[in-house]
Length: 239
Length: 86
Image (tube, rainbow over all chains, first blue to last red; front, side, top):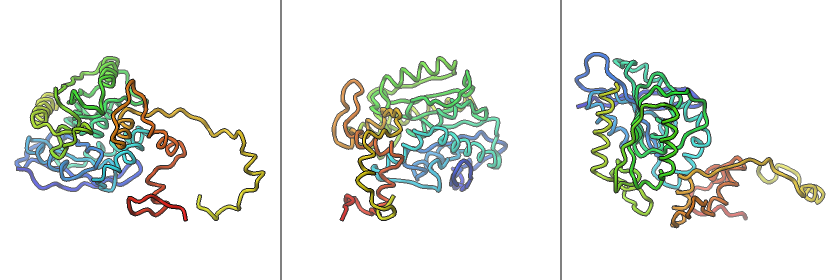
């Protein structure tokens, strides 16, 4: 069992952020840290549950607040207005992510030589941007049903962080041509990358509340379980 | 800019705007946004990556440097009803 989440307010970039971290109950010695980047709707209870579950596996799990102020949303009408500023200004997104990386350094017991990141949907794109930026603090990143489109920011010739993409093969938000472009980007960057595509699987396959086939977002129990295990295997290897 | 903060434009002011060119820039619509805009209309994606016409409403708002949320806030809209001009 994990401890209760510990709030961690941090600032940087252009806002104040209200993150929370979970630690294993039987923690001893420095522990690897995994940053968790939420989907478009913010650091909600679903993300906290994921963080607690990850802490049960032996990690300090630090859920970031990318939107700022601890803002969460439930109205789909807020989706495009929420995401547009980040996708039109990926530098701003990166600044906020790096503020989270720096904040993690203040967590007691954190082994800063073993830091990774994972994220869902928008958060999946976010952790890939951290890898693209060549952030030396990160050993590996995992994207769950995240967008794969690259950015135009400065990036090193090669990427140091290992990359795992967990993708729904039928995700209408991430079409095949975007996957192809991502593969080329990773090859060009000589990245250590892998992509697991789950068949018969749509967008948001890890979100139990997702049940909208017409929209292309449906929970998939087996893909959820397999992807979680794939992430654990990955972090065990790289952290 | 809210009405009443500037004097009413004269006819010459208006006619002087003929052939005025706004600063142009390219604006591409990412797939995810085209998908969501399309889904908002309960339609299916157009073939060959074609943009849904709903974007013709969305893009000028972005190009004007504002947002629907800002317009709603400006109009003090607190419901799903449209903003009406009295």
